[in-house]
Image (tube, rainbow, N blue to C red; front, side, top):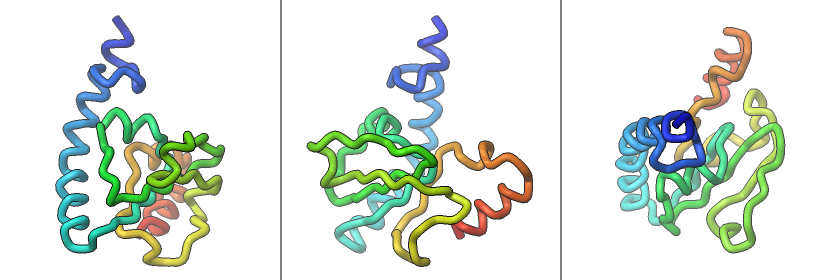
Length: 125
């Protein structure tokens, strides 16, 4: 029963249905960016491959960098669309404007203090 409500790995769970509703807005933005630029670079702060798989995002015009404190394994067949970077989202190791879209599904609440949340928001901006 809990799997049908809280599971992030179950695409039909309640939490993933909520995520899909929120993702619809991001998807609209991504399609516009792809139409304008052809290829889009996305930085997903605190993200994982399972999120994008659960959203059924398979568009090959995007390259998604997953940034986390721990490395995320990327299967060989997906390395043309995904990469994993081990770093702290409070100090991203990329120059400004390296990505077309910076995305975070649910990282800000894990930043700890309000001060760290502000640092995170400024780093994204």
